[in-house]
Length: 151
Image 1 (tube, rainbow, N blue to C red):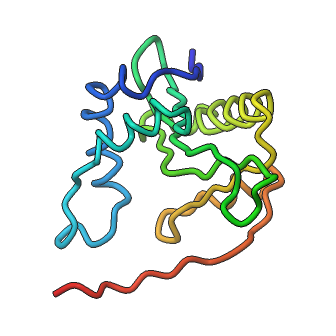
Image 2 (cartoon, rainbow, N blue to C red):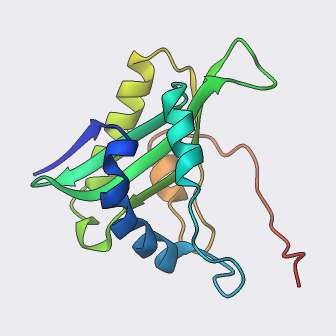
Image 3 (cartoon, rainbow, N blue to C red):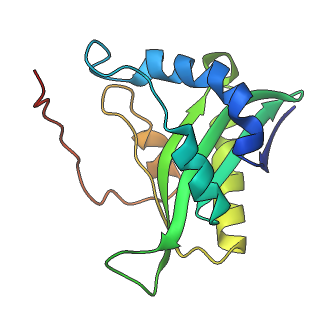
């Protein structure tokens, strides 16, 4: 049975170290130029000041996916408590069993319970999840572009 829970990011770092490389290999761009190198200390700091929101997706106790977001009043809209998604991932062998639905049902319900007014999320154009967000009633608000400027 797939379940979702708010958990401590710091307490899950060792498990995440096994899954985040799968996420990176599947979805990251410019891997030849940008190695995976999470700033674990920065995530831990954000959790310590109450801004990091970590949801673990579990299947029979094993980490099957996650949602990481940052919760704070908006920089441009100080009266709007906002969660901005950093990353989310569901392991490939868990997809198709409504794992993404379980994850986002929980994320949305828990953020609402915490008084968050807006959730901003995204998906990769080369591995789109926009269909899921469209079904859930999210509105597209902008397109992000990237240009490699390094050597």
